[in-house]
Image 1 (cartoon, helix red, strand yellow):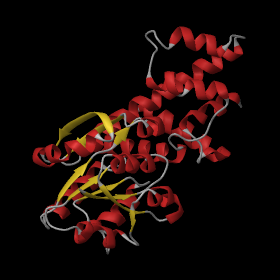
Image 2 (tube, helix red, strand yellow; image 1 turned 90 degrees about the vertical axis):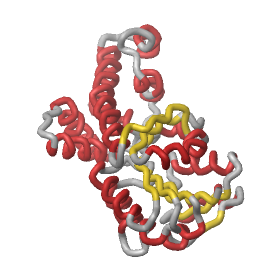
Image 3 (tube, helix red, strand yellow; image 1 turned 90 degrees about the horizontal axis):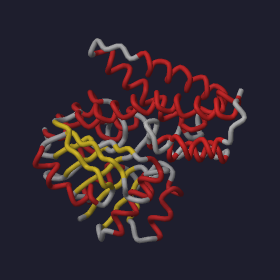
Length: 286
C-alpha cells in the first residue's frame, strides 16, 4: 500500500521504518526534513505538505506532538480531511483529545474517508521493537481493514469502540502511569536515603506486587542517571491536561492525576521539559 507518515520524531521514525520493512511504499512529511533523512535514504518519498502527501496515499498515519498540531494537519487549510482521496483511511496515533478525534471522524466521513484514532503506549522501546500497545477508536470495518498495518507496529491491538474511544483509553493509560511514576521515583529516593543499593532493591520489588512497566523499564534508567526521552516530559504534561479536562467534563475528580500534573509542571519549570518522564526523580533529588 501507499502509506503516508507525518511526524518522524522519537517514536514515529521507528514506526515508519517498520512499514518500509513490511514492504509498503512510504510517503513522509515532517516540519523538520532532516528528521526524515534516514527514511528517505531507505526509499521513502518526501512531500512538502500534508496536502501534497494525502492524494498519493491509501492510508495516512500521523504521530505528532499536540492536539493543536493534529487539528491543523487534519482540519486546517490544506489539511488531510480535505485532501485525502475518497476511500482512504486516516489514522491519528498521536495522544490527543477525544473530542477532536470525533470532529476529525465527522469531517473525514463527509468526504468518504475513514478516520481512526489509535494512540499508542510503549515509548521509544516499544516503537523500536514493534511492541506497541495500540488503542483504536472508530468503525469496525475500518479497523479490520487496517489490522495488517497495526500488526507491523504493535503486539497488543484492541478496538475500544467508536470515534474517540481510542483517545479515552489512552487517557486511562496516562492516568495509571502518572501516579505510578510518583511511586517509582519515591521508592528509589527512599532506597537511596536509607543507604540501600537501588539496583538490589529493584531486583527484589519489580517482580512482586509493585511490579509495573515503569518500574522495570524506567527505574534502571533512573539508577543509571539516564534521563533522555523515551517520552518527553512536555508531552506527558499535555496528556495529563487532556485527561483532567475530559474528567472535568464528565464530573470526575482525579486527585492523583492532579498531583502528578503539578509535580511534572514543577519539573518542567526546572528545565526538564525536553527530558524523559523518568526525570521526575530529579525533583526528589533536590
